Image (cartoon, rainbow over all chains, first blue to last red; front, side, top):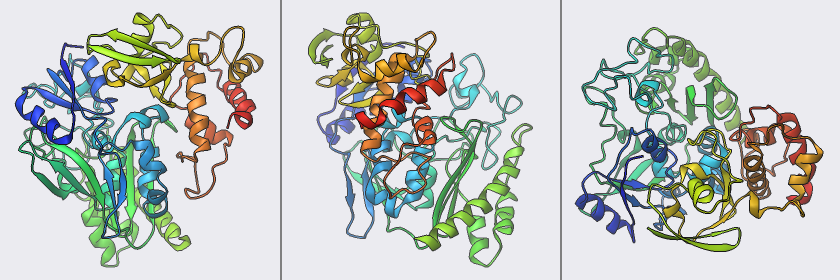
Amino acid sequence: MRAFTYERAADAQAAVKAAAETPNAKFIAGGTNLLDLMKLEIEHPAHLIDVARLPLAAIEETPEGGLRIGAMATNSHVAADARVRARYPVLTQAIVAGGSGQLRNKATTGGNLLQRTRCAYFYDTTKPCNKRAPGSGCGALEGLNRNSAIFGASHACIATHPSDMAVALVALDATVETLSPSGAARSFPLMELHRLPGETPDIETHLVPGELITAVVLPPAPEGGQMYRKVRDRASYAAGLASVAVAGGRIALGAVAHKPWRAADAEAALASGASADEAIGRELEGAGENGRNGFKINLVRRLVPAALAEAREQGRGA
Amino acid sequence: MKTTITVNGEPRTLDLDPRTTLLDTLREHLKLTGSKKGCDHGQCGACTVLVNGVRINSCLSLAVMHDGDQVTTIEGIGTVEKLHPLQQAFLTEDAFQCGYCTPGQICSALGMLKEVAENWPSQETANLTGKITLTDDELRERMSGNICRCSAYPQIVAAIKSVAGELA
């Protein structure tokens, strides 16, 4: 790990001020992804601003009937929250499908959203990767791309976003609240947080440098059932090959794109009376493969109707 | 950087490079070598310790981030003269061969049993709003962050189950 300086932020305003004033600074909260990447010298911040103890860990009711989840709330606490389990079960299911107990006890809501891809070429510093080293090329394009994206990829990058939690949050139509480097607060749909790779896969979100996520806000739970389903190589503690979150009429897919993928075409088809099979078929008209990841298309074709049926069942029981 | 961490009940003040992980602090600076370094990337669980009663991977945490925290390692759980019931259960059930993963398994299991007592769900929990029963499937899922390369898993499950009732 390369040397860095460290400070603990006194409050959120001080944290964004420090980030604005210090070159190559990064926030650290749980650290479970950032420290891993720092050990591998994929990330090498010159300065760490510790935000873990900021008073942003509460989970509160909103006047609209939703929940505001503080960015420092750990994955474990969010998954275990009685209100989340009763009203947003898809979020609990998604969180407990990710990582291990130890990791979820440290990982935070904000950090989970900003975790980096698990693409093997991103991790291997001897290989080209436009995300890690812009302009070096993409090793995955012609390489071991079994776990690469089938939606929204570019010739510069076919990596996927690894979060399970974010997939459920997109299906729940969550909003992100942030503090800008200037100290101003703003909020926007979570669906607009992550970017597709395009020509600049190293730029992964629409946050400006030094902008701090302070909360994720859930609107009131949608009508209808909810369900998260994830397929992976091991039964536990493995990244997804494909996953799906269903929340009422909304569908989001995980591990298939550079961002949590809102299946808008499938949703529209379902809303106009198409069957689940027809609806996901409509979505998959936009899918593409790179040699070894084509199986994901069939996986998604089967996974989504199964999850929709389970969500309907769950909705009936609730 | 000056950092004070209470380890197994004893406040320890150290002057650390910010890069020092909690695991390296325990092993290299405090000579508490019970916590093991397996992968050093949060994949194996051998470094699991309890921080303020919660299990974490000590390899993926900076010591300077734990100023003021209470850390419990395997050395704080039992002694050779007075084994913790879970340590005795690992002996009774033959729940290890080489023993390298065992301190992490035991710290993880103690944290896990507390999580069950607090009714935290796992992906094996079918009814998210009901009371959790620690079935074998639940136990295995909750311990999936601890790898045993000798593959003593059936005995580890038996050892944890044998004390789950009295510790919960």
